[in-house]
Length: 197
Ligand code: CDP
Ligand code: CDP
Image (cartoon, rainbow, N blue to C red; front, side):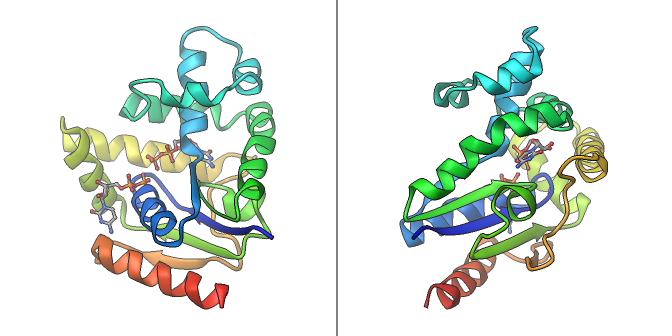
């Protein structure tokens, strides 16, 4: 029996940080599904067809440099709006969730589309200003520009027809605007531990 934790939320909400801490605590495998879309976006920027890029994605593609840049995030969000790309990535994500005894997947549609049966679903959020500030601390540059890009990506992710960003009805909402990483991690660990029994 596999135990799945789905962590969704908008850009720079703290999904990756939380997923890493939780997977380390419980000894679970972790998949950052945003990397799949970032890798497809990078291939499309090189001229590849989006569907083929998604179909032919291999784990090594996730190790490409520069996948964490703001530009790669925008490219990811554009290809992520294409239903053919999303469909091509479903099996990889579901297989990952089932392969390990415990798995954490973080993204936008894990609790709603990829793993609707996940044992624990967390929807992590924070105000756009707080999230943009956190991302700006990582990437530098013009903070107003980082905020504009975060907002643009949120808009596109929430308003696409296929698998839009939204909490699953049974997701626990965690607003991290006023919380430290340690506080968020502690809350998540409590929720997961309670569910695992
Ligand atoms: O994966 P996602 O884009 O949702 O966010 P992240 O990469 O985990 O977090 C973005 C940044 O916010 C990181 O530098 C975290 O250290 C920071 N962070 C924070 O300051 N407070 C939190 N409660 C969560 C994350
Ligand atoms: O770390 P951050 O939240 O900034 O971005 P990410 O999780 O790496 O995701 C990059 C983009 O990929 C998002 O803006 C979404 O458009 C897309 N994505 C998605 O559509 N579905 C997922 N499960 C994960 C990411």
